[in-house]
Amino acid sequence: MFCQKIKDNFLFILNYVALLISLCVAAQATADEANLCIREETYIGGCHLAEKKSRLLSFCTQGRNVIYRIGSEKKLEMEYVFSKEKPLTRWVDKATYTTYFGFRSGRYGYSFGVPQQTFGARAFLEVTLGNQTVMSRRCTQNSFGKDDLESEAIREADDAKIRISGFIFPPD
Image (cartoon, rainbow, N blue to C red; front, side, top):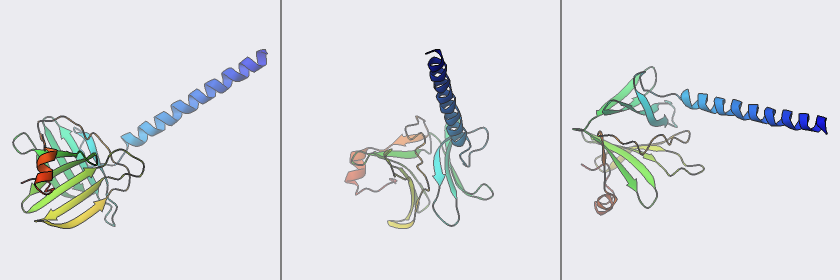
């Protein structure tokens, strides 16, 4: 009886230690996720794009700004800083529960979609020129991030207005 209690306690402690180790490994993997944020910024979302270039897409925040970056750790291809005066647009599609982040730069539109958190769902990037899609990339892993971040650098788009416009996103 005494030996059985010792064995049960030992197994409980062993399972507890295994759980702690797995939680630490998972936390470290999340902390080490590659992104393009600099030390003073907070990573709020992004992903590795599924493509030969193996680029990273990152949304970061620092102070009142949100920053979009795409490229590699060695070569940054684009950086766009959003503020209260020049905000990033966020739209939650009420039909699919996909959260879209979008902006326009010149004649190009950039839209990063974060689908509802379900098995197999992948975030994606779409770039348009006028009304034509010129690039569409999926992420290699689930990339949910903080799609509900509150910031004065993020403007909410009304779902009904996006639908009435023929799903033009990001809006002009």
